[in-house]
Length: 302
Ligand code: R5P
Image (cartoon, rainbow, N blue to C red; front, side):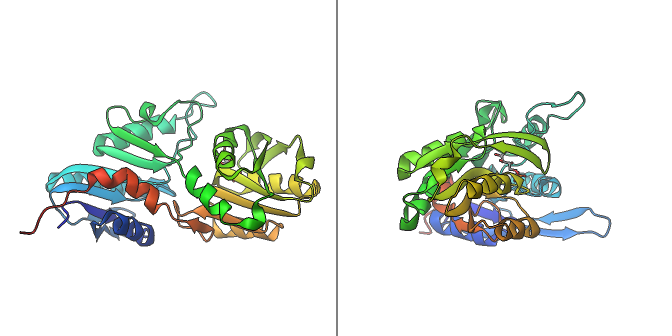
């Protein structure tokens, strides 16, 4: 019998179930009631040992409060250790005040979660100006896993894409593009991006002619509004790419933005299942399970 239980936030039953199957642990749903006034009531299954909570932090505001309720309740009712498994970790992009008076959301979220959890496990957090997740979560364990290997495996299965060029739409995407290309042997191209607003970006793609008469795959850590991928795809189409695809770790886009991407001529959008999205094609369960196996305590039933 396992003493560790994976508590699954509503909506993540598929991903949480896959992870629990890899870990060989029990699961329990986190019950949430929303009151008419917008407040939430949270109910968990109490137990001793380690409580793992599965909840990706897309659309995070309401979810964070509920997760704090769940973590504190599990701990007060006997859990010795509470671990948050959050493949997408929110607010990592706001790592400085870009204008005087802006909140440094990354720092605040880090402190808040560190107060309630013993360990945070996430995948490819958007760390830009800080070196590591340890700078966000001081005094607790924090693991930033990378989906680059799983993305490379997914691309390698597709023989039609062997000649493809992997395209990073901005300088930050270099880390994923470079790691994946080393594994797949595909060539790379990195663009330069200037962002002026949520949906206002300009991309320059020097060397775009490399994509002529070849498939091009835009690789990014996240698709949010989809503007970055859309603008980059246009440049690749103008350069004569014979097919443009997008692959990302986190697909945060809503249905309309995703439809817009596909309607614009992008042949396929794929993502990991870090966030539930119609583009999900890669399960993170094996990667997460490897990192979490030390949390699983088995108690003999004899
Ligand atoms: C930003 O630096 C990220 O790597 C993504 O390129 C960005 O978040 C994508 O956002 P959007 O889809 O809204 O252009």
